[in-house]
Image (spheres, rainbow, N blue to C red):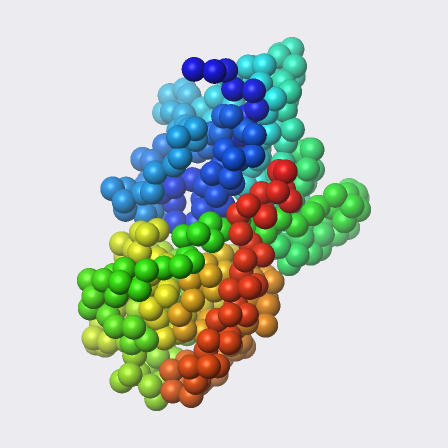
Length: 415
């Protein structure tokens, strides 16, 4: 086996976590193999740790394999039970130091400042302090909830010390990027608040250094779908083409799932279409209880990556009525772009956070939280739109979504 001469390490919550950024990591890793990287590694968490955290996970027996040349490492904890959280961080950081000790030019990309960028910064600092002289270039990507959840919580609670740590860790990297223009603006706004409270100078650095890198999507998984495969997938679920509204995302309040359930009950066209809720998440059990008397609402908790585009292609409309919540704002909306690639009925969403950057002018837009408008938009998609109108909207959506093809995104970020 030849010794690798260029390495990419991505520190991330990888599969089986249902998270757009685990998909980002997969797509960047796959493209890296075709762009001169001879060793590509995802450094992530042991599966039992992910399960214990209560994260929404894909079925373990149906995970898509990675290409040969991509290694997924899940370092075990270091130390005993008396250090419950730091043990796993020590495992990740220690393994990265071992990789950096090898004389291989390496790019380290981290997604989520807490804790993955911390792992990278600590590992590089340790390797340099130990005299290992690592040949490494670091990139930190703020993926949205870094700001909308972690930093915003620090600011709401007046915990400026923690916010300071987050910014210094983020800015300690060679490159710093945000997942959308909205996220970049939020980073700068948060930095201004921290500067005002602490006398720091983070905002100027963020304005100068933060760039935008949109989520990379494997467009080939959504294009040119075989109609027979679509029909077979729908038949297995008891569905028909254009016979259902699709919600496929994390089942959480911020995704607008409660609004959608209520709106479906108000739709004039509810006898024409079922409502399919595909996904898992913290609101699933409550939403199931809300809908237990409605046999036209179907819950699918086991949709895998192969079935997802088929369900998207066959729906009458795809609804993601996301809304801002204190702990989450949709900073891009990867599922929106995936649906735009797959075709099918129109996308119905809101201009929350960065969703406008994902859909452009190719979706039906409603105000966040406006249940009546949501029901009307769904009825319009089902009852009023002509085939030619749907076709024209789908064509514009496809052209927009191709901007996020993983090869193009890789070249701008790592090329």
